[in-house]
Amino acid sequence: MHGQLQYEDVEAAREDLQNRTLARMSGDFARLIYLASTRDYNTGEYYHEGLALQFGERAARKALASCHQDLFQRMVQCSMRELVEHLEVYARCTRLPCSDFIRTWGRLQPYRVTIPLDCSALAAQLFASNVRTALAILDFGQSRRPPDLRSASLRQ
Image (tube, rainbow, N blue to C red; front, side):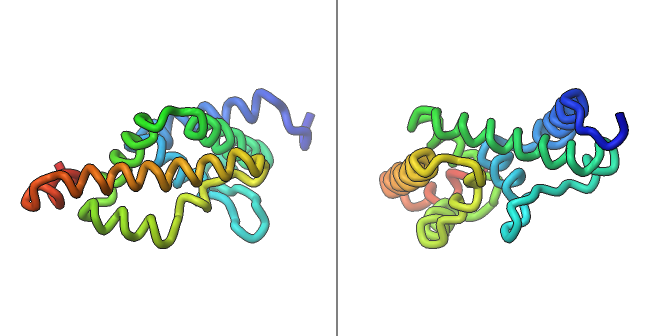
């Protein structure tokens, strides 16, 4: 029926998003940041022009929200080792020296905008705490490297 949101439309939009957009990104942090960036921070509504044109705005919104929620839950549940690895992959993609990345993320805490709207307060707090810890681990690892390898270590 026209105008009614179908489960199949949302699933097709999710699959398209995962295969054509998210799969091309380096790591789960990049994907998480991308998905969060498709959300209007004033309304909480997601928008992706290509998905909206192909599957309709409602299906696109639902697909984006669903992928965002799923990925966020996966990040909350991963081990600290995995989280540090995800963060290191993302830091490498920024092409900044690791120390600059760690300092900026420590001060601005941009990872907070990646938290989905419907996320529990406990999951949000756990995620933020885990990311702060992962940043501290990366910083500690950087401080143990010889000075000439510190800035190059993430740009390989």
